[in-house]
Length: 108
Length: 115
Image (cartoon, rainbow over all chains, first blue to last red; front, side, top):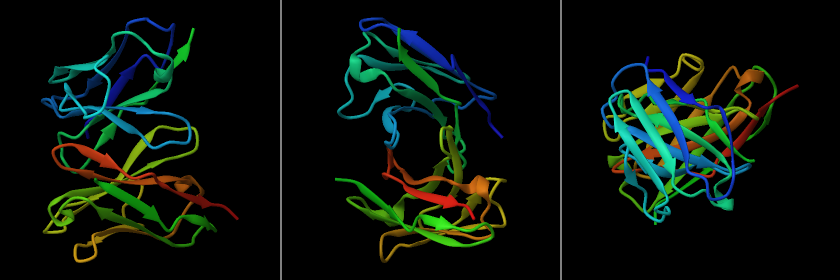
């Protein structure tokens, strides 16, 4: 099974900060990685798929990079609406998905 | 517009059964692989099960294998999850999700297993 390790688990930042979250796969997943934002009581919202493709309607301050086993989600300038929990997901195995443990972005 | 609408959640006693449904619209349902993902209270996301589009090949997480059954009715654009022998640790919000060029999710349905 492919394991996904996400770091950090919690991140304290201020509005306007550049924020980076990392996700590592236990084996190569090519570019089959997605990033989600989740707010309390809501379903996960897709931000990035195929490692670096921005989902329609998602602000351009979000970007994704990486391939193989190392991936990053970057928020170029943190906005008040961005305080949430973020998850990575691998879908290299197509049917059997694995998620990272999540990163909670808190107000500093 | 792509939409997934889950239903069927509720309160059930340990050892009981529940059947979840997910009605799809806005895309050619029969051509998409579909999955169920769950989230226990205060926890992260856990993939539960998946089914291929036309052939209906099925896949399960070890935690539910032998207890849960995924199925689909392509004529009704509906995905199902039959959950038997439910345990307290199955308590979660259950989301259906589809994988195509992108990944799309429903809003979820809450399953509570408690006596």
